[in-house]
Length: 80
Image (cartoon, rainbow, N blue to C red; front, side):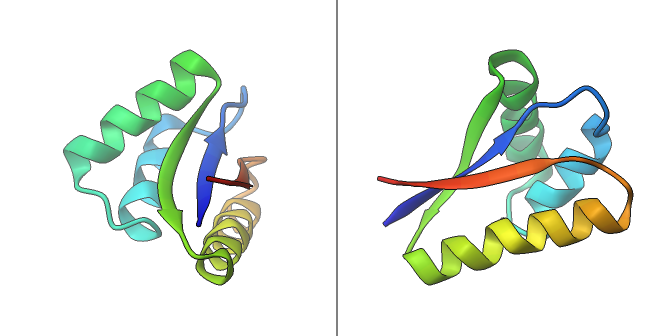
């Protein structure tokens, strides 16, 4: 199993991060806001824990959506 993380940057809007958490990770608006604040305040936060293939897809989806909006939002995965 792998943890998928989002990393803070100075350009990606908080609203976009919340939207990613709702759309890609299936979080409620309340939970997405909590995670976004953790990303903002702590530099990164875990969005979910998945099998390797699913984690890879989530990371790629985040990068594709962020890139399409011109945001440098970074997502990574690490072994649980």
